[in-house]
Length: 102
Picture 1: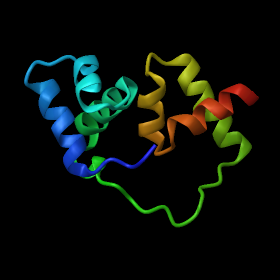
Picture 2: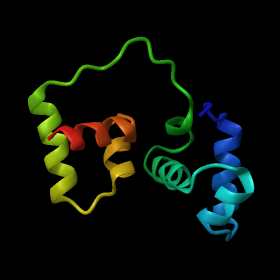
Picture 3: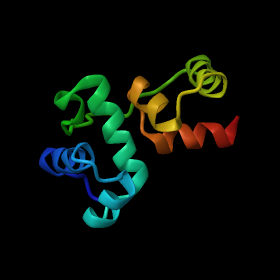
């Protein structure tokens, strides 16, 4: 999957804010609906700057304790997987991988 530009992300958000459902925007723009929800959450929490593509210079390495803390927060809170991922600055797929191992 390719990275989406800031303009594409903002277009998706604009369409949802105009009254379209995230699923209809997903179908229209050929973007997974989970991605639309994640962008909406990030936009709400961090604004436009949160949606900007950032270059990743090296992989973050999390201690076992930190991974357990994030997993516990996900399991005990009402936050969704994309919300927890965004909050901690990790990819949803990374969190899914951690959940499958623990």
